[in-house]
Image (cartoon, rainbow, N blue to C red; front, top):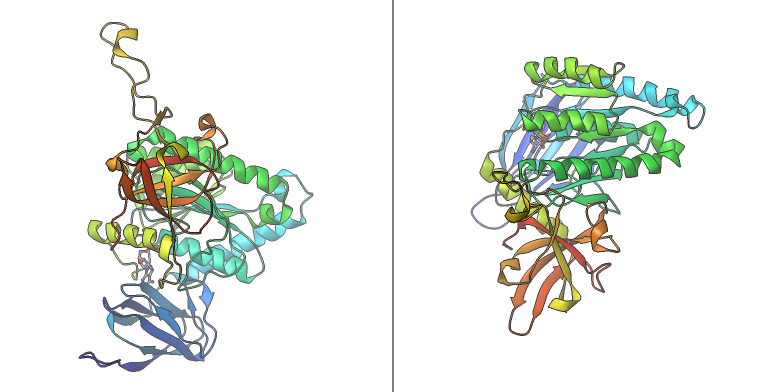
Length: 429
Ligand code: ADP
């Protein structure tokens, strides 16, 4: 385009089993297409000649099994070719999973063996967990399976806004630009971006999600055979490790893929077998292309995710502003407050916070810039066990007139007046 930076088109020839690793520049999108051969981005094959436009700062790799020529148009922060990748070991895992799906499909309906692989991907932050999850899902979808993607990462999840855990069926290879399709995911709102805020609530919501999926599977042999791919948080020490074991147990995982950490692998190999003696714990190499993201980058990424929820990736959505009276909405927090007053406790005992206690929130200026989840619950006491319809963002609170203004992704009445507040806020930029 115009300006000082000349738009540079360049072609890169990739040898078989190599990849082009790219970080898009900070100011403008990068266009890219395949002009010869075949190539894929994280498991999704790129159709020949079609231009894809990647947003600023996007980090990805174009991998080819048999060789390809790729054309780029725009600025990159970095781009380089690597011929050492763990892709062969990853696709071998896919082949094993595929065989298990076929075996599950051939088994009598409802039998134990009709359950396909339930894969959980674990490892430290920036080990490539979500990338490997996407590859396994896209390769499966390419072969006609509809595996369920479960994302337990409340910090950098791929399905919906941060602070949530969610699941969605993957019916087509994941779009390399748009990401996971957002149609009707099953979402539970935890409300914080770190599990230490309320570990018990995190566990309860993971259990609710697992139980709901179990019910869906029992009526759907196809998704049962296709199984799940579960992405997890990068928190692997202490309580983080306990939560990994909890997830393996709760989702009845039968394959554990450990990325890039010897210690985690040997610990899980011992402990996961106690949970399920027939579980497979597999160690996989971390890709050298995985980019480390610092705290600031993660915060930015969270903010972009929230913006994307309301405005779309390329500003193509227009969220709807609504005004409601305070009395029209019931906002709750989960956990935090003391369970019993001091006076009711034996002398010397400290009041214990009940992690699942529902506390009504008084509407005040404190709600400004808060992201709220809209619960599917019919009554307040069902909030903890209910999934959420979506999110709203508070843009104004008029205490005098008792009115609250918020953005919602679509116009019309909210599906419920029961809203959940956590610690998630967003400053529109
Ligand atoms: P984790 O889920 O373990 O935190 P991710 O899978 O999100 O890690 O990877 C971290 C970042 O590295 C992401 O932005 C991802 O797109 C990027 N990335 C992963 N693999 C590659 C690769 N081979 N080449 C370039 N970038 C990559």
